[in-house]
Length: 527
Picture 1 (spheres, rainbow, N blue to C red):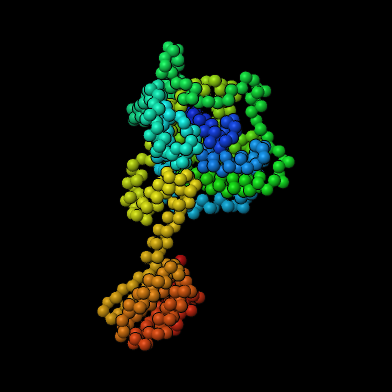
Picture 2: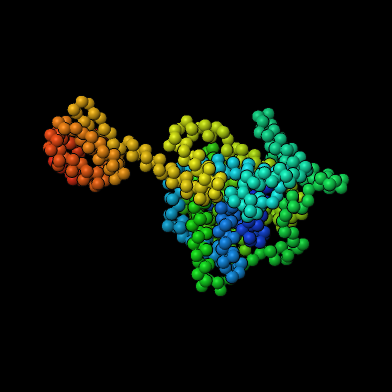
Protein backbone atom coordinates (compact mmCIF):
# COMPACT_ATOMS: atom_id res chain seq x y z
CA UNK A 1 0.00 0.00 0.00
CA UNK A 2 2.89 2.36 0.80
CA UNK A 3 4.23 1.73 -2.69
CA UNK A 4 0.90 2.89 -4.15
CA UNK A 5 1.08 6.24 -2.31
CA UNK A 6 4.81 6.77 -2.90
CA UNK A 7 4.29 9.15 -5.83
CA UNK A 8 1.06 10.74 -4.57
CA UNK A 9 2.47 14.26 -4.93
CA UNK A 10 2.71 13.76 -8.71
CA UNK A 11 -0.18 11.32 -9.14
CA UNK A 12 -2.96 13.29 -7.43
CA UNK A 13 -2.62 16.43 -9.63
CA UNK A 14 -2.35 14.15 -12.68
CA UNK A 15 -5.52 12.31 -11.63
CA UNK A 16 -7.40 15.62 -11.60
CA UNK A 17 -6.28 16.29 -15.18
CA UNK A 18 -7.29 12.81 -16.34
CA UNK A 19 -10.65 13.14 -14.57
CA UNK A 20 -11.37 16.41 -16.38
CA UNK A 21 -10.37 14.91 -19.73
CA UNK A 22 -12.20 11.61 -19.16
CA UNK A 23 -15.54 12.97 -18.00
CA UNK A 24 -16.76 14.48 -21.30
CA UNK A 25 -15.22 11.61 -23.27
CA UNK A 26 -17.17 9.06 -21.21
CA UNK A 27 -20.38 10.96 -21.91
CA UNK A 28 -19.49 11.45 -25.58
CA UNK A 29 -18.69 7.77 -26.19
CA UNK A 30 -21.93 6.71 -24.49
CA UNK A 31 -23.91 9.19 -26.59
CA UNK A 32 -22.24 8.02 -29.82
CA UNK A 33 -22.89 4.39 -28.82
CA UNK A 34 -26.64 4.97 -28.35
CA UNK A 35 -26.22 3.85 -24.74
CA UNK A 36 -27.53 5.63 -21.60
CA UNK A 37 -25.21 8.52 -20.70
CA UNK A 38 -24.67 7.09 -17.24
CA UNK A 39 -23.36 3.86 -18.82
CA UNK A 40 -20.33 5.84 -19.98
CA UNK A 41 -19.74 7.17 -16.46
CA UNK A 42 -19.96 3.66 -14.99
CA UNK A 43 -17.40 2.42 -17.53
CA UNK A 44 -15.11 5.35 -16.69
CA UNK A 45 -15.29 4.69 -12.95
CA UNK A 46 -14.73 0.94 -13.42
CA UNK A 47 -11.88 1.58 -15.88
CA UNK A 48 -10.18 3.80 -13.33
CA UNK A 49 -10.70 1.93 -10.08
CA UNK A 50 -11.17 -1.76 -10.97
CA UNK A 51 -8.85 -2.02 -14.00
CA UNK A 52 -6.38 0.33 -12.30
CA UNK A 53 -6.13 -1.95 -9.26
CA UNK A 54 -5.72 -5.18 -11.24
CA UNK A 55 -3.56 -3.87 -14.11
CA UNK A 56 0.22 -4.04 -14.12
CA UNK A 57 0.52 -0.83 -16.15
CA UNK A 58 1.85 2.25 -14.38
CA UNK A 59 0.39 4.88 -16.71
CA UNK A 60 -2.39 3.36 -18.83
CA UNK A 61 -5.91 4.67 -18.19
CA UNK A 62 -8.93 2.58 -19.16
CA UNK A 63 -12.50 3.54 -19.89
CA UNK A 64 -15.09 3.58 -22.68
CA UNK A 65 -13.31 3.86 -26.03
CA UNK A 66 -14.34 5.66 -29.20
CA UNK A 67 -13.07 2.71 -31.22
CA UNK A 68 -15.93 0.56 -29.93
CA UNK A 69 -18.79 3.03 -30.52
CA UNK A 70 -19.88 1.58 -33.87
CA UNK A 71 -19.77 -1.98 -32.50
CA UNK A 72 -21.67 -1.03 -29.35
CA UNK A 73 -24.28 1.01 -31.21
CA UNK A 74 -24.91 -1.85 -33.66
CA UNK A 75 -24.99 -4.42 -30.86
CA UNK A 76 -27.54 -2.48 -28.79
CA UNK A 77 -29.78 -2.31 -31.86
CA UNK A 78 -29.58 -6.07 -32.47
CA UNK A 79 -30.45 -7.41 -29.02
CA UNK A 80 -33.99 -7.42 -27.60
CA UNK A 81 -33.11 -5.34 -24.53
CA UNK A 82 -30.23 -3.30 -23.09
CA UNK A 83 -29.90 -5.94 -20.35
CA UNK A 84 -29.01 -8.47 -23.06
CA UNK A 85 -26.21 -6.20 -24.27
CA UNK A 86 -24.90 -5.91 -20.70
CA UNK A 87 -24.80 -9.70 -20.51
CA UNK A 88 -22.70 -9.70 -23.71
CA UNK A 89 -20.26 -7.25 -22.06
CA UNK A 90 -19.92 -9.57 -19.05
CA UNK A 91 -19.28 -12.58 -21.31
CA UNK A 92 -16.75 -10.53 -23.32
CA UNK A 93 -14.91 -9.81 -20.08
CA UNK A 94 -14.82 -13.52 -19.25
CA UNK A 95 -13.38 -14.25 -22.71
CA UNK A 96 -10.68 -11.60 -22.18
CA UNK A 97 -9.86 -13.14 -18.81
CA UNK A 98 -9.44 -16.50 -20.54
CA UNK A 99 -7.26 -14.88 -23.22
CA UNK A 100 -5.00 -13.59 -20.46
CA UNK A 101 -4.62 -17.06 -18.94
CA UNK A 102 -3.88 -18.44 -22.41
CA UNK A 103 -1.08 -15.85 -22.70
CA UNK A 104 -2.44 -14.26 -25.90
CA UNK A 105 -1.08 -10.86 -24.87
CA UNK A 106 2.03 -11.63 -26.91
CA UNK A 107 0.12 -10.39 -29.99
CA UNK A 108 0.98 -6.81 -29.03
CA UNK A 109 4.70 -7.49 -29.38
CA UNK A 110 4.35 -7.99 -33.14
CA UNK A 111 3.20 -4.44 -33.88
CA UNK A 112 5.95 -2.37 -35.61
CA UNK A 113 7.29 0.63 -33.71
CA UNK A 114 6.57 2.96 -36.66
CA UNK A 115 2.90 1.96 -36.51
CA UNK A 116 2.70 2.60 -32.75
CA UNK A 117 4.29 6.04 -33.08
CA UNK A 118 2.06 6.72 -36.09
CA UNK A 119 -0.98 5.86 -33.98
CA UNK A 120 0.09 8.32 -31.27
CA UNK A 121 0.66 11.09 -33.80
CA UNK A 122 -2.68 10.33 -35.48
CA UNK A 123 -4.51 10.54 -32.15
CA UNK A 124 -2.83 13.90 -31.55
CA UNK A 125 -3.92 15.25 -34.93
CA UNK A 126 -7.44 13.88 -34.44
CA UNK A 127 -7.70 15.61 -31.07
CA UNK A 128 -6.73 18.93 -32.65
CA UNK A 129 -9.13 18.55 -35.60
CA UNK A 130 -12.04 17.10 -33.64
CA UNK A 131 -11.85 19.50 -30.72
CA UNK A 132 -11.49 22.69 -32.78
CA UNK A 133 -15.27 22.94 -33.41
CA UNK A 134 -15.88 22.59 -29.66
CA UNK A 135 -13.27 25.26 -29.03
CA UNK A 136 -15.26 27.80 -31.07
CA UNK A 137 -18.66 26.68 -29.80
CA UNK A 138 -19.88 24.21 -32.45
CA UNK A 139 -20.88 21.17 -30.38
CA UNK A 140 -22.95 19.18 -32.89
CA UNK A 141 -20.61 16.17 -32.69
CA UNK A 142 -20.06 14.24 -29.46
CA UNK A 143 -16.86 14.85 -27.49
CA UNK A 144 -15.65 11.25 -27.73
CA UNK A 145 -15.93 10.86 -31.50
CA UNK A 146 -12.65 9.96 -33.22
CA UNK A 147 -13.89 8.57 -36.56
CA UNK A 148 -13.70 10.48 -39.85
CA UNK A 149 -17.38 9.95 -40.72
CA UNK A 150 -19.49 11.31 -37.86
CA UNK A 151 -22.92 10.28 -36.64
CA UNK A 152 -24.36 13.71 -37.54
CA UNK A 153 -23.77 13.12 -41.29
CA UNK A 154 -20.63 15.26 -41.27
CA UNK A 155 -16.94 14.38 -41.36
CA UNK A 156 -13.92 15.75 -39.55
CA UNK A 157 -13.25 18.54 -42.06
CA UNK A 158 -16.86 19.57 -42.73
CA UNK A 159 -17.34 19.87 -38.97
CA UNK A 160 -14.42 22.31 -38.80
CA UNK A 161 -15.89 24.30 -41.69
CA UNK A 162 -19.30 24.51 -40.02
CA UNK A 163 -17.55 25.55 -36.81
CA UNK A 164 -16.67 28.86 -38.45
CA UNK A 165 -20.36 29.52 -39.18
CA UNK A 166 -21.65 28.62 -35.69
CA UNK A 167 -19.17 30.55 -33.57
CA UNK A 168 -20.04 31.27 -29.92
CA UNK A 169 -17.98 34.33 -28.79
CA UNK A 170 -17.88 33.20 -25.15
CA UNK A 171 -16.59 29.76 -26.20
CA UNK A 172 -13.80 31.35 -28.26
CA UNK A 173 -12.86 33.66 -25.37
CA UNK A 174 -12.74 30.80 -22.88
CA UNK A 175 -10.86 28.57 -25.35
CA UNK A 176 -8.26 31.25 -26.14
CA UNK A 177 -7.59 32.01 -22.46
CA UNK A 178 -7.42 28.28 -21.75
CA UNK A 179 -4.80 27.67 -24.45
CA UNK A 180 -2.78 30.63 -23.13
CA UNK A 181 -2.83 29.21 -19.59
CA UNK A 182 -1.78 25.77 -20.83
CA UNK A 183 1.07 27.28 -22.85
CA UNK A 184 2.32 29.51 -20.03
CA UNK A 185 2.28 26.58 -17.59
CA UNK A 186 4.75 24.78 -19.85
CA UNK A 187 7.34 27.60 -19.66
CA UNK A 188 10.50 26.75 -17.69
CA UNK A 189 10.00 29.62 -15.24
CA UNK A 190 6.57 28.30 -14.26
CA UNK A 191 7.73 24.68 -14.15
CA UNK A 192 10.49 25.62 -11.70
CA UNK A 193 8.02 27.28 -9.34
CA UNK A 194 6.95 24.54 -6.92
CA UNK A 195 4.06 26.60 -5.56
CA UNK A 196 2.48 27.12 -8.99
CA UNK A 197 2.98 23.49 -9.92
CA UNK A 198 0.62 22.52 -7.10
CA UNK A 199 -2.20 23.82 -9.31
CA UNK A 200 -2.50 21.76 -12.52
CA UNK A 201 -3.07 23.93 -15.57
CA UNK A 202 -6.16 21.95 -16.70
CA UNK A 203 -7.78 22.56 -13.29
CA UNK A 204 -7.13 26.30 -13.66
CA UNK A 205 -8.55 26.15 -17.19
CA UNK A 206 -11.78 24.55 -15.97
CA UNK A 207 -12.10 26.97 -13.05
CA UNK A 208 -11.50 29.91 -15.39
CA UNK A 209 -14.11 28.60 -17.86
CA UNK A 210 -16.76 28.23 -15.15
CA UNK A 211 -15.96 31.71 -13.76
CA UNK A 212 -16.05 33.51 -17.12
CA UNK A 213 -19.34 31.94 -18.14
CA UNK A 214 -20.78 32.63 -14.66
CA UNK A 215 -19.98 36.31 -15.13
CA UNK A 216 -21.90 36.36 -18.40
CA UNK A 217 -24.84 34.56 -16.77
CA UNK A 218 -24.84 36.88 -13.72
CA UNK A 219 -24.91 39.94 -15.99
CA UNK A 220 -27.72 38.49 -18.08
CA UNK A 221 -25.49 38.75 -21.15
CA UNK A 222 -26.55 37.17 -24.42
CA UNK A 223 -22.97 35.86 -24.67
CA UNK A 224 -23.58 33.37 -21.85
CA UNK A 225 -23.20 29.77 -23.00
CA UNK A 226 -26.35 27.68 -23.21
CA UNK A 227 -26.60 24.19 -21.74
CA UNK A 228 -25.70 22.73 -25.13
CA UNK A 229 -22.21 24.20 -24.77
CA UNK A 230 -21.69 22.81 -21.26
CA UNK A 231 -21.07 19.35 -19.81
CA UNK A 232 -24.41 17.55 -19.59
CA UNK A 233 -24.50 14.98 -16.81
CA UNK A 234 -27.56 13.17 -15.39
CA UNK A 235 -28.34 14.71 -11.99
CA UNK A 236 -29.75 12.58 -9.16
CA UNK A 237 -31.64 14.27 -6.31
CA UNK A 238 -30.95 11.43 -3.87
CA UNK A 239 -28.83 8.33 -3.36
CA UNK A 240 -31.83 6.19 -4.30
CA UNK A 241 -32.27 8.07 -7.57
CA UNK A 242 -28.53 7.77 -8.23
CA UNK A 243 -28.74 3.99 -7.74
CA UNK A 244 -31.65 4.00 -10.18
CA UNK A 245 -29.22 4.92 -12.96
CA UNK A 246 -27.71 1.44 -12.68
CA UNK A 247 -28.79 -1.40 -15.00
CA UNK A 248 -28.11 -5.10 -14.55
CA UNK A 249 -27.72 -7.93 -17.09
CA UNK A 250 -30.34 -10.68 -17.26
CA UNK A 251 -29.26 -14.32 -17.53
CA UNK A 252 -32.41 -15.16 -19.46
CA UNK A 253 -30.68 -13.85 -22.60
CA UNK A 254 -27.77 -16.30 -22.26
CA UNK A 255 -29.29 -18.63 -24.87
CA UNK A 256 -29.51 -15.81 -27.43
CA UNK A 257 -26.88 -16.46 -30.19
CA UNK A 258 -26.62 -12.71 -30.86
CA UNK A 259 -25.35 -12.16 -27.30
CA UNK A 260 -22.47 -14.57 -27.90
CA UNK A 261 -21.58 -13.05 -31.27
CA UNK A 262 -21.47 -9.58 -29.70
CA UNK A 263 -19.42 -10.87 -26.77
CA UNK A 264 -16.76 -12.44 -29.01
CA UNK A 265 -16.57 -9.31 -31.19
CA UNK A 266 -16.20 -6.98 -28.20
CA UNK A 267 -13.59 -9.27 -26.59
CA UNK A 268 -11.42 -9.39 -29.72
CA UNK A 269 -11.65 -5.70 -30.65
CA UNK A 270 -11.31 -4.46 -27.06
CA UNK A 271 -8.27 -6.70 -26.53
CA UNK A 272 -6.61 -5.45 -29.72
CA UNK A 273 -7.24 -1.82 -28.76
CA UNK A 274 -5.90 -2.49 -25.27
CA UNK A 275 -2.71 -4.16 -26.50
CA UNK A 276 -2.17 -1.27 -28.93
CA UNK A 277 -2.87 1.22 -26.18
CA UNK A 278 -0.46 -0.15 -23.60
CA UNK A 279 2.23 -0.58 -26.26
CA UNK A 280 1.84 3.11 -27.12
CA UNK A 281 1.78 4.24 -23.49
CA UNK A 282 4.94 2.28 -22.72
CA UNK A 283 6.62 4.25 -25.52
CA UNK A 284 5.67 7.48 -23.71
CA UNK A 285 6.95 6.33 -20.32
CA UNK A 286 10.17 8.16 -19.46
CA UNK A 287 11.11 5.30 -17.10
CA UNK A 288 10.80 2.71 -19.90
CA UNK A 289 8.56 0.41 -17.85
CA UNK A 290 6.98 -2.50 -19.70
CA UNK A 291 3.38 -3.52 -19.08
CA UNK A 292 2.78 -7.29 -18.68
CA UNK A 293 0.36 -7.87 -21.55
CA UNK A 294 -1.28 -11.06 -20.27
CA UNK A 295 -2.01 -9.44 -16.92
CA UNK A 296 -3.49 -6.47 -18.78
CA UNK A 297 -5.89 -8.75 -20.67
CA UNK A 298 -6.96 -10.23 -17.34
CA UNK A 299 -7.43 -6.74 -15.88
CA UNK A 300 -9.53 -5.65 -18.85
CA UNK A 301 -11.55 -8.84 -18.55
CA UNK A 302 -12.32 -8.18 -14.89
CA UNK A 303 -13.12 -4.54 -15.73
CA UNK A 304 -15.59 -5.47 -18.48
CA UNK A 305 -17.29 -8.05 -16.27
CA UNK A 306 -17.79 -5.46 -13.51
CA UNK A 307 -18.84 -2.73 -15.97
CA UNK A 308 -21.41 -5.03 -17.59
CA UNK A 309 -22.75 -6.15 -14.20
CA UNK A 310 -23.37 -2.51 -13.17
CA UNK A 311 -24.83 -1.31 -16.49
CA UNK A 312 -21.72 0.14 -18.12
CA UNK A 313 -20.45 -0.09 -21.70
CA UNK A 314 -17.16 -1.93 -22.53
CA UNK A 315 -13.79 -0.56 -21.43
CA UNK A 316 -10.35 -0.66 -23.03
CA UNK A 317 -7.03 1.07 -22.51
CA UNK A 318 -7.56 4.54 -24.02
CA UNK A 319 -4.72 6.49 -25.65
CA UNK A 320 -6.20 9.97 -25.10
CA UNK A 321 -6.61 9.56 -21.35
CA UNK A 322 -3.33 7.69 -20.99
CA UNK A 323 -1.35 10.34 -22.87
CA UNK A 324 -3.04 13.08 -20.80
CA UNK A 325 -1.97 11.11 -17.73
CA UNK A 326 1.65 10.97 -18.93
CA UNK A 327 1.72 14.65 -19.91
CA UNK A 328 0.30 15.61 -16.51
CA UNK A 329 3.31 14.02 -14.82
CA UNK A 330 1.82 10.81 -13.40
CA UNK A 331 4.33 8.36 -11.96
CA UNK A 332 2.25 5.32 -11.02
CA UNK A 333 -1.18 3.75 -11.41
CA UNK A 334 -2.38 5.60 -8.30
CA UNK A 335 -3.27 8.42 -10.69
CA UNK A 336 -5.49 6.09 -12.71
CA UNK A 337 -7.26 4.81 -9.60
CA UNK A 338 -7.71 8.32 -8.18
CA UNK A 339 -9.26 9.62 -11.40
CA UNK A 340 -11.90 6.87 -11.12
CA UNK A 341 -12.56 7.78 -7.48
CA UNK A 342 -12.86 11.48 -8.36
CA UNK A 343 -15.31 10.68 -11.14
CA UNK A 344 -17.45 8.61 -8.79
CA UNK A 345 -17.46 11.25 -6.03
CA UNK A 346 -18.19 14.23 -8.28
CA UNK A 347 -20.88 12.44 -10.29
CA UNK A 348 -22.58 11.23 -7.10
CA UNK A 349 -22.18 14.35 -4.95
CA UNK A 350 -21.48 17.38 -7.19
CA UNK A 351 -23.03 16.78 -10.62
CA UNK A 352 -24.35 20.35 -10.72
CA UNK A 353 -20.82 21.75 -10.53
CA UNK A 354 -19.66 19.50 -13.38
CA UNK A 355 -22.55 20.70 -15.53
CA UNK A 356 -21.15 24.22 -15.31
CA UNK A 357 -17.94 23.29 -17.19
CA UNK A 358 -17.79 24.80 -20.73
CA UNK A 359 -16.94 22.28 -23.44
CA UNK A 360 -14.57 24.82 -25.00
CA UNK A 361 -12.37 24.70 -21.87
CA UNK A 362 -12.16 20.91 -22.08
CA UNK A 363 -11.52 21.15 -25.83
CA UNK A 364 -8.51 23.38 -25.15
CA UNK A 365 -7.06 20.74 -22.80
CA UNK A 366 -7.47 18.02 -25.42
CA UNK A 367 -6.05 20.20 -28.21
CA UNK A 368 -2.96 20.89 -26.12
CA UNK A 369 -2.62 17.16 -25.42
CA UNK A 370 -2.88 16.50 -29.16
CA UNK A 371 -0.19 19.09 -29.87
CA UNK A 372 2.20 17.20 -27.60
CA UNK A 373 1.44 13.85 -29.24
CA UNK A 374 1.82 15.09 -32.83
CA UNK A 375 4.88 17.28 -32.43
CA UNK A 376 6.78 18.09 -35.63
CA UNK A 377 10.06 16.64 -34.34
CA UNK A 378 8.46 13.16 -34.42
CA UNK A 379 7.91 13.45 -38.18
CA UNK A 380 11.49 14.65 -38.69
CA UNK A 381 12.82 11.80 -36.57
CA UNK A 382 11.10 9.13 -38.68
CA UNK A 383 12.03 10.85 -41.94
CA UNK A 384 15.70 10.54 -40.99
CA UNK A 385 15.26 6.80 -40.35
CA UNK A 386 14.46 6.15 -44.02
CA UNK A 387 11.39 5.27 -46.07
CA UNK A 388 10.99 1.81 -44.56
CA UNK A 389 10.17 3.58 -41.27
CA UNK A 390 8.71 6.86 -42.52
CA UNK A 391 6.19 5.34 -44.95
CA UNK A 392 4.45 3.03 -42.41
CA UNK A 393 4.47 5.94 -39.92
CA UNK A 394 2.78 8.39 -42.30
CA UNK A 395 0.41 5.85 -43.87
CA UNK A 396 -0.77 4.78 -40.40
CA UNK A 397 -1.54 8.42 -39.58
CA UNK A 398 -3.46 9.00 -42.82
CA UNK A 399 -5.36 5.72 -42.51
CA UNK A 400 -6.48 6.49 -38.95
CA UNK A 401 -7.47 10.05 -39.90
CA UNK A 402 -9.70 8.91 -42.78
CA UNK A 403 -11.15 5.73 -41.21
CA UNK A 404 -10.94 4.93 -37.51
CA UNK A 405 -8.33 3.75 -35.02
CA UNK A 406 -8.60 0.00 -35.51
CA UNK A 407 -8.86 0.02 -39.32
CA UNK A 408 -5.98 2.51 -39.53
CA UNK A 409 -3.78 0.36 -37.30
CA UNK A 410 -4.47 -2.75 -39.38
CA UNK A 411 -3.54 -0.84 -42.54
CA UNK A 412 -0.37 0.42 -40.83
CA UNK A 413 0.61 -3.11 -39.76
CA UNK A 414 0.10 -4.38 -43.32
CA UNK A 415 2.31 -1.58 -44.71
CA UNK A 416 4.93 -2.22 -42.03
CA UNK A 417 5.02 -5.93 -42.92
CA UNK A 418 5.32 -5.05 -46.60
CA UNK A 419 8.45 -2.97 -45.97
CA UNK A 420 9.84 -5.70 -43.69
CA UNK A 421 9.40 -8.33 -46.41
CA UNK A 422 10.78 -5.92 -48.99
CA UNK A 423 13.88 -5.25 -46.89
CA UNK A 424 14.51 -8.97 -46.36
CA UNK A 425 13.78 -9.62 -50.04
CA UNK A 426 16.43 -7.14 -51.21
CA UNK A 427 19.14 -8.25 -48.80
CA UNK A 428 18.75 -12.03 -49.00
CA UNK A 429 20.27 -12.41 -52.50
CA UNK A 430 23.55 -10.89 -53.63
CA UNK A 431 24.84 -11.29 -57.20
CA UNK A 432 28.33 -10.15 -58.25
CA UNK A 433 29.79 -10.42 -61.75
CA UNK A 434 33.51 -10.02 -62.56
CA UNK A 435 34.20 -10.75 -66.24
CA UNK A 436 33.46 -14.47 -66.64
CA UNK A 437 33.15 -15.13 -62.91
CA UNK A 438 29.76 -14.95 -61.17
CA UNK A 439 28.99 -15.12 -57.46
CA UNK A 440 25.49 -15.94 -56.15
CA UNK A 441 25.36 -15.54 -52.36
CA UNK A 442 22.23 -16.33 -50.33
CA UNK A 443 21.95 -14.57 -46.97
CA UNK A 444 19.55 -14.68 -44.03
CA UNK A 445 16.14 -16.08 -44.96
CA UNK A 446 15.46 -16.83 -48.63
CA UNK A 447 11.77 -17.43 -49.33
CA UNK A 448 9.76 -18.23 -52.44
CA UNK A 449 9.36 -14.46 -52.90
CA UNK A 450 12.98 -14.39 -54.08
CA UNK A 451 12.32 -17.03 -56.73
CA UNK A 452 11.53 -14.68 -59.70
CA UNK A 453 14.62 -12.50 -59.28
CA UNK A 454 16.85 -15.55 -58.69
CA UNK A 455 15.60 -17.23 -61.89
CA UNK A 456 16.12 -14.04 -63.86
CA UNK A 457 19.66 -13.58 -62.59
CA UNK A 458 20.58 -17.19 -63.30
CA UNK A 459 19.23 -16.88 -66.84
CA UNK A 460 21.46 -13.83 -67.37
CA UNK A 461 24.61 -15.90 -66.85
CA UNK A 462 26.23 -16.26 -70.34
CA UNK A 463 27.93 -19.35 -71.70
CA UNK A 464 31.51 -20.32 -70.79
CA UNK A 465 31.37 -18.76 -67.28
CA UNK A 466 32.38 -19.82 -63.80
CA UNK A 467 29.59 -19.67 -61.19
CA UNK A 468 30.11 -19.90 -57.45
CA UNK A 469 26.95 -20.42 -55.40
CA UNK A 470 27.48 -19.66 -51.69
CA UNK A 471 24.64 -20.67 -49.35
CA UNK A 472 26.64 -20.89 -46.14
CA UNK A 473 25.21 -17.61 -44.80
CA UNK A 474 21.57 -18.55 -45.34
CA UNK A 475 19.66 -19.60 -42.19
CA UNK A 476 16.55 -20.64 -44.10
CA UNK A 477 16.15 -21.59 -47.77
CA UNK A 478 12.74 -22.30 -49.26
CA UNK A 479 12.42 -25.59 -51.15
CA UNK A 480 11.38 -23.64 -54.28
CA UNK A 481 14.77 -21.91 -54.21
CA UNK A 482 16.52 -25.27 -53.88
CA UNK A 483 14.64 -26.54 -56.95
CA UNK A 484 15.61 -23.48 -59.01
CA UNK A 485 19.27 -23.89 -58.06
CA UNK A 486 19.31 -27.62 -58.78
CA UNK A 487 17.68 -27.08 -62.16
CA UNK A 488 20.34 -24.51 -63.04
CA UNK A 489 23.14 -26.85 -61.92
CA UNK A 490 21.62 -29.76 -63.87
CA UNK A 491 21.52 -27.82 -67.16
CA UNK A 492 24.67 -25.71 -66.69
CA UNK A 493 26.78 -28.01 -68.87
CA UNK A 494 24.60 -27.17 -71.88
CA UNK A 495 26.06 -23.65 -71.83
CA UNK A 496 29.51 -24.84 -70.73
CA UNK A 497 29.00 -23.17 -67.32
CA UNK A 498 31.18 -24.50 -64.52
CA UNK A 499 29.41 -24.46 -61.14
CA UNK A 500 30.83 -24.70 -57.66
CA UNK A 501 28.78 -24.55 -54.48
CA UNK A 502 29.68 -23.70 -50.92
CA UNK A 503 27.36 -25.14 -48.31
CA UNK A 504 27.48 -26.19 -44.68
CA UNK A 505 28.03 -29.83 -43.78
CA UNK A 506 25.34 -30.17 -41.11
CA UNK A 507 22.51 -28.10 -42.55
CA UNK A 508 19.71 -30.44 -43.64
CA UNK A 509 18.38 -28.07 -46.30
CA UNK A 510 21.86 -27.63 -47.79
CA UNK A 511 22.00 -31.41 -48.36
CA UNK A 512 19.17 -31.06 -50.88
CA UNK A 513 21.45 -29.25 -53.33
CA UNK A 514 23.19 -31.17 -56.11
CA UNK A 515 26.73 -32.28 -55.38
CA UNK A 516 28.99 -29.76 -57.07
CA UNK A 517 30.25 -28.77 -53.70
CA UNK A 518 33.01 -27.00 -51.86
CA UNK A 519 32.29 -28.17 -48.31
CA UNK A 520 32.54 -25.59 -45.52
CA UNK A 521 32.75 -26.91 -41.95
CA UNK A 522 30.37 -25.51 -39.34
CA UNK A 523 31.80 -22.60 -37.34
CA UNK A 524 32.24 -23.38 -33.67
CA UNK A 525 32.08 -20.53 -31.19
CA UNK A 526 34.86 -20.55 -28.65
CA UNK A 527 33.97 -20.26 -24.98
